[in-house]
Image 1: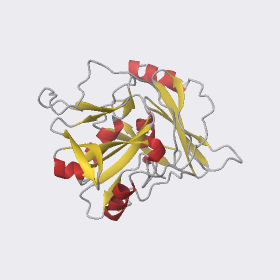
Image 2: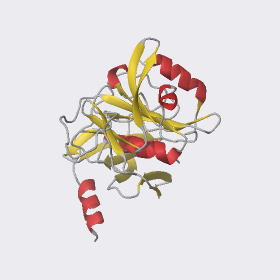
Image 3: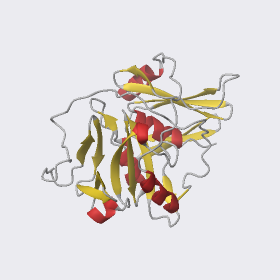
Length: 271
């Protein structure tokens, strides 16, 4: 058995604690942003079989502090080696962005917010961008991990949760948007580089996982009498957490290094 298989086997045999229940509906801030994007977005994820009973609410942060060995792109004067992605942060949440992106302070009717993108026009118009938002005031426009496409097919948008924040991103390339979102993490969690994804199948379902990451997926029967739902993440050790989502009578359980990766994997499940 390879080292990869050994680590995957160890992950899948860890006993998970009971997952906490959904906390409530995120609402409030960012409505103007969301309204604009709702006009642009079609259901690019149409055909998804994963049914979620309720949107994800607020969760507690998983860590804190800074890593001095990472390139932090908050400062416009900071530099990274040519071609190397840079790390941007908001409080204890981090994500990776392309090397030519920068931070721009955008004015939305008197309300200023830092948005990252390749240009001020792209960032402040939410065309090609990454933004951080408090999960308690994040107005959801789709389910976490689901990447939707614009009606013109020229923008791919989505969001994931990390700690107490939502990381939202949009680019003109599905793989690029997914790679950025997969890198979202709380300080101290591993940096996921999901440049390529592989499709697998089990029990009549298909799903995708990052090609070079240890991600476990298990398909079982949904417990009799339980409603169709999706869990919040349950931390099972220092480097892995577990989430599940239901597809009809089946339950898909994902063990991943971060919540963002788990949400992205669950969003790919199809019958």
